[in-house]
Image 1 (cartoon, rainbow, N blue to C red):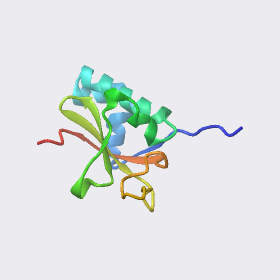
Image 2: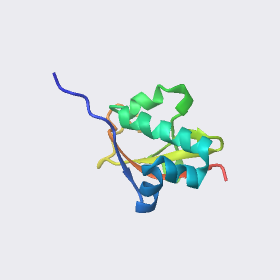
Image 3: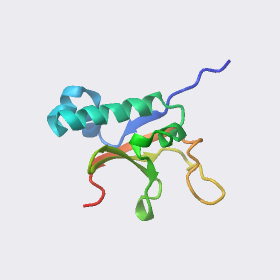
Image 4: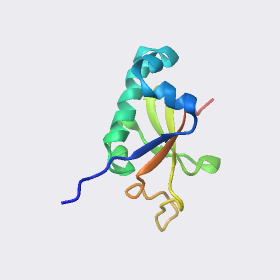
Length: 118
């Protein structure tokens, strides 16, 4: 029997990695409520074996972004803030219709935590 692996999670910058590495850093940057929710989302990603598992969590509201952010995925953190990740595969796994193949995505880069509607 093969053990399932978790989604690999990398960070675009060292500063972002530092913020997301400890609860104290997250609380300092975002406040206690958002830090708790961000930690929950990062833990869910770490425990998932593919991105498809995240799509099945209604509270995460995972969805693929469009246009110049086509290979990025957005997750709810605390309204209006979202955790933005980018697919870390070359080539990017795609379905025949051009959409992302969520089952095949196992490596992500955390790009930012932001309000994407600003």
